[in-house]
Image 1 (tube, rainbow, N blue to C red):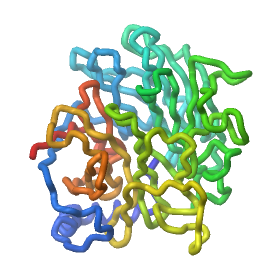
Image 2 (image 1 turned 45 degrees about the vertical axis):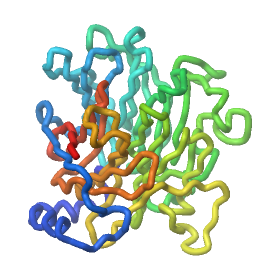
Image 3 (image 1 turned 120 degrees about the horizontal axis):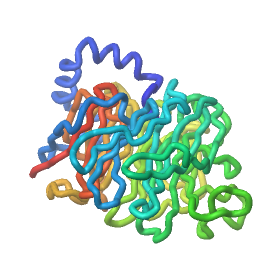
Length: 395
């Protein structure tokens, strides 16, 4: 989670001194650190505030149950819900179970595809020991039943950063397979080379079936998982990721999009049909560039990102992965929307390429996440401002 990025504190101080000056300089600059990032704007994008002020919102989502409710995850262990009547209330409170130092906290939420009938949903958080925990809950009469908690996964975290945290179901799977993103375990440079290891759940996208059981596991392993019948941990779906804080599935095509936060030079966005058995390259590569070794690197089967941008001299620090837009703003349909956490810039690219990005907005927000509602409207969360905004666009 790019909340306590190592370059953030200095940038916060600089920004506090002169936010307007910084934004003006960015807008006026003709220097592009990555040619694909700063092409001319093709549409007008607007942000409209929605709801009250939240405490460090890190995720926005919906239940897919036809109610139109909107859910906001707070890093401090609360989930807020906008009811069908338009009022906001607490849906879940697990603050007493969550550690919130560094990049830790309540980080992810996903609703079972059959939530309307079974009431099941899933959260991803760091527990009081700082380890990742994925837990199933049930909801009744519009709120979570905290006593229904069932722990699915507990993953040891050697450091307090790079926790990943995203949860999602892929509708095109036709089965309740839960996808879980994990960071490489933290520190810097993946000192344990965990992202490449098939014997570690860190630096991965995992895939499990919470409705089944495999052996003594409290979940099932889908038979189509790439390592279910071979060397490697059965849960692994993709590997070679540094901190895939936010990923999404295109509700139209099922393609997997990942915003993977870089080490110190390059931020990347990855795209694949499903992500099955894909190696995204970290720590051999950062983006498309050698990291370790610094030169002469190679990695069989590595899939390069569809786009990257660098951080040189521009205050960018961490990509916030978004969504392929499928909502009512026709001008934005079929475009993948993403942001940089530190600068608040928002870009988009055509979902099928070419992946030449258009920068739409320079905002003053620390953009922690994007999210969709049932109708495909896209939202963005401002971590320190505490607000969420609906995105609209016109050509």
